[in-house]
Length: 81
Ligand SMILES: [Zn+2]
Image (tube, rainbow, N blue to C red; front, side, top):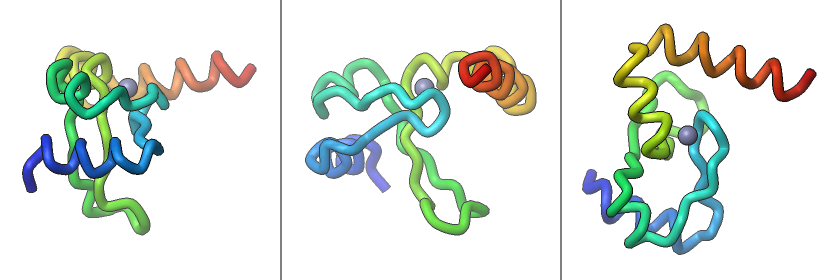
């Protein structure tokens, strides 16, 4: 799967959002330039393809998968409280 092709396809629906932080997907060209990623999640029952914004990609790289998810759930909790 080509990431830029997938980004264009998702952009054309106008519904693209980061799977983790809910950031809105910008226009296709901007998304490709800023480094949005499209990843496969095979375990997920419904969506097999997710979008990840550059901020979350970087955080994930810095913290590792487990640390990133912990950080994310803390953020989500603080937002809803
Ligand atoms: Zn994000």
